[in-house]
Each structure stands twice: as C-alpha cells, then as structure tokens.
Length: 244
Length: 246
Ligand SMILES: Nc1ncnc2c1ncn2[C@@H]1O[C@H](COP(=O)(O)OP(=O)(O)OP(=O)(O)O)[C@@H](O)[C@H]1O
Ligand SMILES: [Mg+2]
Image (cartoon, rainbow over all chains, first blue to last red; front, side):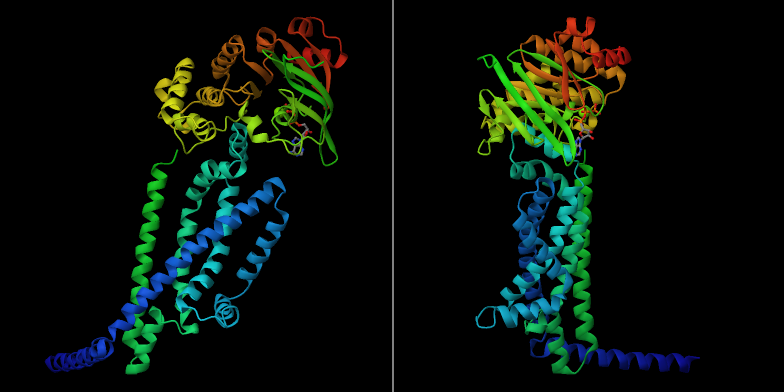
C-alpha cells in the first residue's frame, strides 16, 4: 500500500515538474505571455469596435424596415436592407472577413484590426437589426399612434416612445449577440490579425506545446463571456425592477 | 358653408381598405365650441372617420380643411396640425415607461419648446383639475382604467389643442369608472372645448352633445341637435338603432 502511494507521489511530482517547465517555456521565456496579453487587447478592441458599428447599423436597418412595414414608404431603403440581411446571414462570417480583407481592401494599406472591425460590425449589424426589429414589433401599435397624435414625427416617436420600450424587451437577445460576437472574432487569424486565439496559436508553434497555450486561451474567453453574461443579467434585472 | 367659426370642414371624404369602402363620401363641418357626438353600429366607420381627421388613416378621397387649410394636401405638415388636435383612444395608450408627469410634459417640452418648469406647472394644474395631482410620479401601470383615461385626456390638453377627438373613451372601462371619465369630458365641454366624440353613451350624447351624427355603412344618415335626434329621429335606420340601444 505504502509503495503504491509512493509511486503515485513520484509520478505526480514528475508530472507537475514537466508542467512547471512547460509553463515557464510557454509563458515566461521570451515574455511569451505577451502574445496572449496583446492578443487579448486586439480581441477586445475588435469586439468593441464591431459592437458599436453593429449597433449603429442594426438600429438604422431596423428603423428603415419597420418604417416600411408600418407606412409602406422607404421601398428602396427596405429593398437594400433586405439584400444586406439575406447576404450577411446567408454566408459564413469567415468568408465575409476574407472577402472584405482580400477583395474589398485588397489594394488599400489599412490596419488589419480596422478591417476586422468593419467585417464583424457589418456581420453583427444584420443580427442586431432583426433583434431590434422584433422588439419594435412587440410594442403595441397604439403607442405609435399616441405619439403621432401628439404631433411627434415618425423618428421622434421612435426615439422617445417606441425604442426605449423595444430595447428593454430585447436586452437579453442583444446581450447574447454580443457574446457571440466576442467569440466570433477568434477567426481574425484568417487575415493574420494577432488576436487572442492567434496569440495562443503562435505560442503553440514556438514551443510545440498545444495543451497549456490553448487551455489558457479558452479560459480567458470563458472568463470574458461569464463577465459579459453577468453584466447582461444585472442590466436585465435592473431594467425589470424599474418596469411599469 | 365655411364661416370663420368653422374649425374642421370635411368634404366628400372617402376611405377604402382594399376593396372595402369604410367611408363613402362624408360631408360635415365642426364649428368652434361644438360637441359633435358620432354614433352608429359596429363597423359603420366611426373610428375610421375620426382617425381620418388627424390623418392616422390617410383618406383615399375628398378633402379635410382644418382652420381653413387643406391638411390632405401633399405638402401639408401634418405634424403641426396634429399638435392642435388632441386625441383620446379607447385603450388609453399612455407611455408605460414614463411617469404620469413625463407622459404629460414630453410633447410640450419637445414640440412646443416649453421649459420643463412651465410644462410641469401646466401639467400639475391639469392633474389637480381631474383630481390626480398626487399620482404625478406614478407609472401608468399603477393606475386604474378610469384614472388612465383621465390622464390620457389631460396629456392631450397639455398641448393646448383647438379640438379634441375621442374614440369610445369609456368602452374599455369597468362600469363603475365610466362616470369619472364622462365627468371630465363634460367639464371640458362646459369650458368651451371643441370636441368630436364617438361613443355609445347615449346619456352623454343627449346632455353634453350640441350635435349628434348617426353613421351607417360609411355614410352619415342623420344629423341633428340631441333633442330632436333622440325624440324625433327621421331616418328609419336611426330609429331601429335607437330602439336597440336606448
Ligand atoms: N386598418 C384596417 N384595415 C382593414 N379594414 C379596416 C381597417 N380599419 C377598419 N377597417 C374596416 O372598416 C370598417 C369600419 O371600421 P371602423 O373601425 O371605422 O368601425 P366603427 O364604426 O368604429 O366600429 P366599432 O363600433 O366596432 O368600433 C369595418 O368594416 C372595419 O373592418
Ligand atoms: Mg371604432
């Protein structure tokens, strides 16, 4: 029995020793942790930029689409929006990223993270648009009529009356979309942008150890997503407690 | 005939929903101080008519002159006209995400460029008049139906409208709350407000109305002062309708 324990102990020591050596080799030597740290910065920058672009695009498209649904105006605008939604939601985001980098910006010398922000922003906008539109459609049409009857124009009624209620209703769905967006930026490596995932992968290439760098990358994403989820739930609860 | 007392002049007004002709040529004028009561069976076009007056429904034919100007003209700024036509809906349509006070001051502040203090002062005065001053900071969901409708009325009044349109303002209320809303409307009429009211409250029509209009199948079949309308209706269909509801 004691021998068995001893064997286990020795095995464990050897294993933790190798792990320690690998850890030093993966993250400490040559300051390799910087690949993860800088990559995290790029990931956050791209996510945040794409988030803002996606929200702007999404609200714009949602407003145009619902204006067309309720008034029958904006026929051309609506047609353009529908093409945008069909194309973006009907093709893989990796392909969109590649097309924007290698086709649209082929002859332009531009920061790759800007390219990624544009690609992911355009992609996210399509999903935000449909989420926001469903929120707008969930609001009783009497609200629009009440706003218009007071003398507000369409955009003012949207801004003061419809959107505040609609956004409240779709906060969980929007939060979910932002989490998806964060994870989707992990394909930025396809245009050789050194985001968090690419950073982990570079370490793997240098040290020939896949385990630690990739687990570290996964953990960082997991923590980020958990923080985001927590934020969304808090926001949701706060909105609901002020719900009347 | 158009006189300077004419507030709204409706000429040959038509409205179709596809193949359904909801309004089939309405001629009517509303004068300053009128309390026009519109009655008629379900589906006769009463709501459609009222909603055409402030272009919540776009007429498919005819003209509406408001204070002498054709509001159906393509270049007319309907948003400006609507500021002068208050509307009260069957379902109240208060803004649920705002307090009562915010419901009432949003439009005056944004559209009439009143200061917050000025708008709130006016709103509080109106709230006091309808006995709801202490509910100023409540949200609509915290009010009863009768209270909601009284708020909806004073919200419209905050814009100092020249005319008030009511579409069955008491139809969604529990019976015991109908009285409090009709009372507010009666006081408004006594103050000289011009009103167009679609209602099934025949008592209100008789006491407060200055003119009663009977609509059926998108047409006006009879128009008279309340006394004559209720005591000596001329049209056979008016008689049938009244015999059912009185
Ligand atoms: N948006 C619409 N689309 C299609 N048809 C409509 C629309 N609004 C009203 N109608 C039709 O027009 C006709 C007149 O409707 P309206 O609501 O004006 O009647 P009403 O006199 O107000 O009836 P009620 O007493 O039931 O409120 C009805 O046949 C109705 O079905
Ligand atoms: Mg009706």
